[in-house]
Length: 575
Image 1 (cartoon, helix red, strand yellow):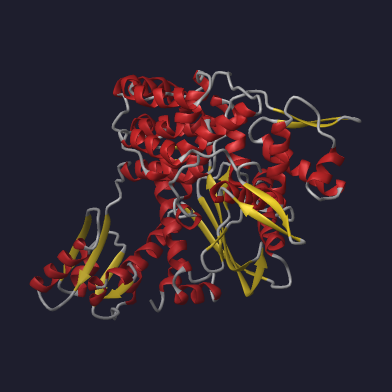
Image 2 (spheres, rainbow, N blue to C red):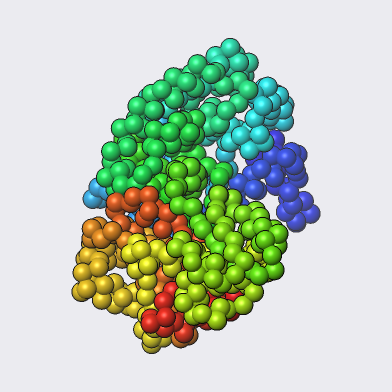
């Protein structure tokens, strides 16, 4: 405390005389941050890991850790087990030797910095830049056009390397599958700054880690030739993933065009993975569940890419890839023009006006046939998705020709879209592309038990396989399938060989609780491994319909009172 504060005894009283308030505040902050909150297991584990860093070349006795962190030996043992689980993601481990204690083992030394940044840095006090050092660094980084967040990450990385050096940890191992993308000429001022900051020159591994926040997006100082070289290298890797992706889900999709579209995103994804930099992109589970096929493709791509790179990739990357896959699926030509009938005795001009209004409601091309009488409509041999008219026809054969809606529905986009989503699934059911049924669940049984029973019944009927059930169990253990207001949508790839989308709806008479969330309705969706254009389109329509039902109380009521003899079309009654 020399030069900072001193304890003085005067007139029988002890008091502190402070000489440097800033340094004393830093000490107090560090003390409070690291030494007081040992009751928080996450913080305590971070500080235990920091202690293993400090003594990285020796074994640490558990009793010493227990004494230092004011905890029992049993608590420290649990903390070590929790840390082992966390470190496994990075390929590192805590080794134990009888009568000697525990020791941190990191096989690739550049991961010392990665692990410290991910698990320790937020819970401990790092060395600090002086006000002048911080200002000078910010001025240099401003020339790259970086955000405040990138500046913050750069400073953190810089101070982590400084702290590691103070512990005698010098990272030197090469960083595989990483692309340095900045112009060398633009880095001179930065290199000079770092040379003055550190007592000895940085090596290439330390340099790559410190500057990594500047290589995960395109900056004004990104060198195009380096970026294109990375794109060329990773495009070959991407092409190599295509057979495996198609083996997982055989869907009609232009994979070559897909990888061309994500070429820059893929470079930055690989760079983020190398130093475990979390993506800022966030897409909620509720949104992702609207695109199940794209989501499954994205998950499989992340798995395959992780295997190729021998590097774990965060689940956050799945969301953005899902969007790219869905864009590619949407771009696939769909030769399925919807056909509507307008039957109105008011005259051809009114009919044409209504037909124009219907066409305006749809993004894709549709066909609208107009008829001025029931006789004209009866003579038509065309198949219609929907009939617009003033009232139900006297001839019931015409009412059965296509679902009938009032003419004013053509002017209510929301209502028409809801009806369309139900109609398209109904059409798929009639064509054998989708199987749908409703089961009433018992509130006395749990969500897991009821869904398991539902799957078992389908297995017994030859609709699903035991492998499907095991995949479902694993998926439920990893992540909740509950979305929105009490709606669960477990969806998995079905390897049974059936050429259809299987949808099994389950209704609880009263909501049950699962993973602290209420569940009222379950939609179990089995997606065939092989998907042609018709099944791909059907799957998209099924999820549109599920999301529509989940948001519409009348539809959910219709679902609860579902009559298997009346068909899926009953869902759109009273909407």
